[in-house]
Amino acid sequence: MVSLHLLRRTRRRAYLGALLALDRLFGKRSPMIPHMCRWDRKNASELRASGEQFLQYFINVCGITPHAHILDIGCGIGRIAVPLTHYLDNYGGYEGLDIIPEAISWCSRKIASKYPNFRFQLADIANQHYNPNGAIHAAEYALPYDDAAFDFVFLGSVFTHMLPQEVERYLSEITRVLNVGGSSLATYFLLTPETLDRIERGESTLAFTNIGGGFRAISKTVPERAVAYDESYIKGLYKRHGLVVKIPIRYGTWSYTVSDFEYQDLVLAEKAATLKSNKVHF
Image 1 (cartoon, rainbow, N blue to C red):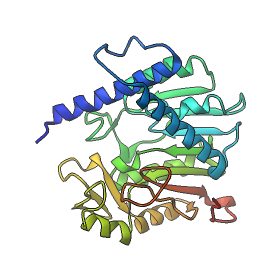
Image 2 (tube, rainbow, N blue to C red):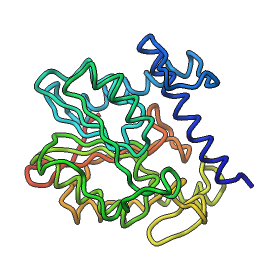
Image 3 (cartoon, helix red, strand yellow):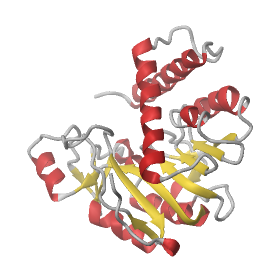
Image 4 (spheres, helix red, strand yellow):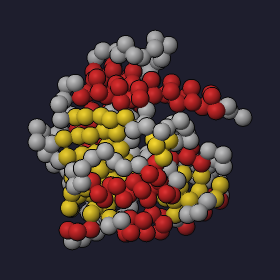
């Protein structure tokens, strides 16, 4: 069995490797990256391509404009922030939030220092998988932003590492910080009759076999490693908190669904007040 110490060290090295990739994109290696880290050009290119692909999705499907105010929860090492630096204008703004100190430090020095309308904050939120010694429980966390401060909120691979009370708290906070008519895009592992069938047959890339209330996890001892939710449960949470899911949901490849884009499932929703239609046209 892999030790918890080894898992934490592996996660840290992955973050440092990704930081090195972005340093190369900017043309200079950061002094905070240990010389032992290695990250080849192929991985750097894939990281950049993923961010650019998400940017096109934000524009073409989510409808963000150059003067949008965007919140990126779980911003990591700038996968989304970097391509947005050449899309947002001076009227737009970006806020990045993450629980990994190295990521926030790098983004602040490499991105925010060059783009005044880009800011990054560290959130010391407890997560058994990523930040076990965090000071604040996610189910009690308040986003450090004013009401109606954003046009668009993105969460990439955040809810896939959170438990039900935490997800519900975040959805409540997302509704609070969104403008009327604003939208959110979040990635999930969604449980449907089709994905459950693939899981039972051992055909999905992740074995969500540990069953909880409304969710499944790949680990019984550390469920936050990867969490999947019943689609109907997630839709119910969105409705409860004034967010209307735009259909169709775009399913990812984690369960061997045919997709040309994302590994995880994409759920786009709008704040209910001005919603006229919940149909997305691709």
